[in-house]
Image (cartoon, rainbow, N blue to C red; front, side, top):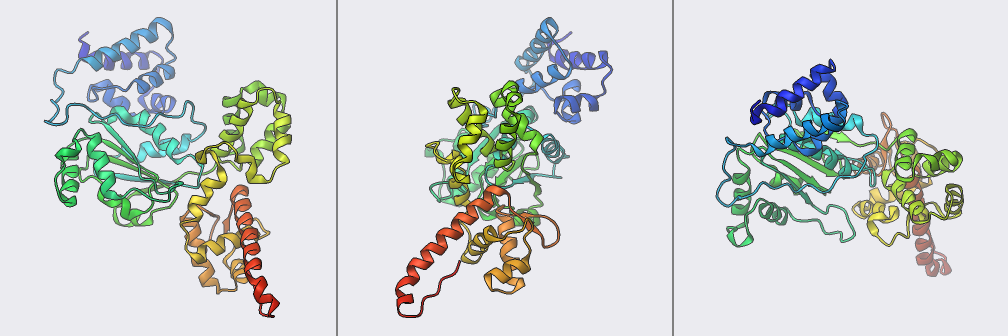
Length: 447
């Protein structure tokens, strides 16, 4: 069997030997039917190692059979007689994806949706926006899928953090991002033309005709993204953002994907993977309490897991009891890293709000019911229902509240705790500011 055909033929033979269709193998492996078909037919010449491992797992290959399967993929990787020579100035293929999480929990539906969107025929879906609340795992999802699908982008994968939210509060400009991307494409800074428009033109020209995947992570808004979108219909872009970016959906036909919080079962699976099933089974009530306090946010669950891993002398029950004795958000602080601090992470979204939306967010923390309606916020804020509705829509676009039907909204327990903290702090500040005026009989403060 010729090296060039070895892997595709072996994959087809192994699949048929256990009576699997391409669709069934796709479901087992997490790859697309198109990816498997391309591998078997030889249209895809570069099977990514992660994809090879997933296929071997799906085919239940062990020992010598698995070694033969992997070796065939490696021979195919090395056999590229007809691969195009890199263009001048592009002597390597960029493989610049961040490291994936060791084990992404849940997200099977979201991964399948990404595959469906981004593997549609050229020109159908070029951009997908992955949005959701702080700490819900947008970047982890995008990076995990990108590693799975990297073999379908033989010209490379790029990734840039646009710093739309973060401790600095200063997002990356589109031009700075283009310079970073051009550097990743192998073009040194000394070769960049002037003015800025020429650099944008060079970026788009370099991507023309290539099949590349580009992750634009942590975006602030659509204006930051638009200059970075390639003009080539063979490229694909994943944008992650806390903001819903409706402008990209309206103008650039970006397909939106909202990432939800984890279910209780998925949260338990995440803790079990980090701490071991035995620890969860030994203290089921404590595990349930921790899961409840994390509100389905993977970041919160990972912080709790890290605390447990760093204190192996404490049982899960003792850890749960200790954490329960602190104010809610203090449970998820003190890791000496802003990226692992829920309160800090929420603050980066809150700081981007206008005055009305910020006040509405604080008032939503004071709202006693599970469902938040414009009329209730209007009464608390002493504004019209139309004004309250616009403010709530702003919060929903920023992923600081969730829509729950027509003019119904909700907040998870951690966001509600943060909003309540802000409401109390703001009231205290207002009271302190009003105290001198109150001595003159004119004091008045409100949240």
